[in-house]
Amino acid sequence: MLRMAQAMLAFHTAFGPPTNYQRRTTLQHFTIATRESRLALWQARHVQSLLTAQGHSVTLLGMTTKGDQILDRSLSKVGGKGLFVKELETALEEGRADLAVHSLKDVPMELPEGFALACVMEREDPRDAWVSSRYPRFEDLPQGAVVGTSSLRRVALLRALRPDLKIEPLRGNLDTRLKKLDDGLYDGIVLAAAGLKRLELGARIAQVFETGQMLPAAGQGALGIEIPEGRADVAQALASLVHLPTLLAVSAERAVSRVMGGSCSMPLAAHATFSGDVLHLEAAWGDPEGAAALVQVNGQAPVADAAAAVRLGEQVAQALQAAVAAQGAAGL
Image (cartoon, rainbow, N blue to C red; front, side, top):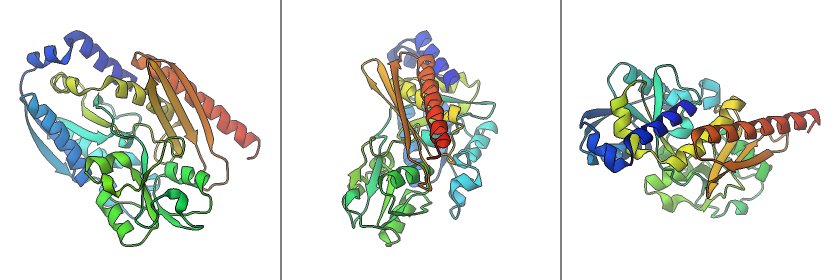
């Protein structure tokens, strides 16, 4: 992330504001590799429209990933969220595509050699959403109600809020998850607010969890664009889509995850927001079984570049590690 962020910032320095470097961009044809879920296609088409507005011609290469195919087991047991990006990376490597659009929270903390995260776009609502037709407020749930999620982070945070709940696995794309809810398999489910809003399904949101209740995952709500390393032409075309505040915030969040060894098999949350030039970063670690108390830490620092964002993330991660170790030593 640091290398990627530095490259983005260097590009902006070299080419100046978007109005300058757009005139220098050679118009090209690009192919975007994308998963074929409705949300993934929305994300790819969103980037397609922005590149088309620059004068480029852009086509989509729809693909089904292993993450889409394996629905009977949790991601933490079958290889993690990298299952959603591997086939797209193969298309990039083989030259069948020039870029791939991802939900950033699905992108592993370390990319394979030969790939670069060339762009982080402006974030949508990063919060989690409570979706239920039976109980408009999460607080209205009766004892022992059934809630659906397969995210270990959400499981840990839900158990911290309501240890009485029965939490059941929930896999599949967004439409599949909503159908399972509508079929009566759950009293309510927890989804990312960003995906619902992007697909104009905001009316399905009964309640948005504030970050003090449910701290988001690192990168949640942001889109990341991956390219083959060395494709300066693609990076140049994407440069105007970079949103610097989001880039710096997710750089700090992903630094927490990287230090913690973060993956979908870890009940880890990290979320950063700016107040002026000061970046505030919160992180939490929980026990999906509910046997230990939720551990939360926070930190803040002036942040103007990627290096400062990463340093803040590393500091908060170290504080979180110390707090988790102290809890374990106390036998909590």
